Length: 161
Image (cartoon, one colour):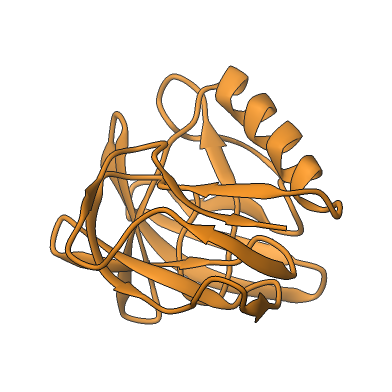
């Protein structure tokens, strides 16, 4: 699962969307599958979340905020892990849309220096606003979208160098 806000990141895979594995610094584990309660954990920190959905449409509620998330197959998890590894370097990074939606705000400008986790833009999808954050520190080389524009999954949003 990926979502905006505090930068929580984990992935949920498997045919029924409940097999888990650690990614980045966070791990995901069911506390009560019937009630939809799960735990996100990193080091000594843990937070409880409410998980709901089926198929490819999943939502996590964290501290009263409902966040749309993506369910990835095992193959997609491996590809995403490889992409995350390439983002930790110093080369260019293409930031793409993880879900279709409307660009509500572009919160940076070309040539701006950003830190990892800085807000870059906001996408509205299913009446929820999702903040896209910088995957690593860098300089915004190009912005490929504008406020009011509709984007599709995988569409280029901006480039960092």
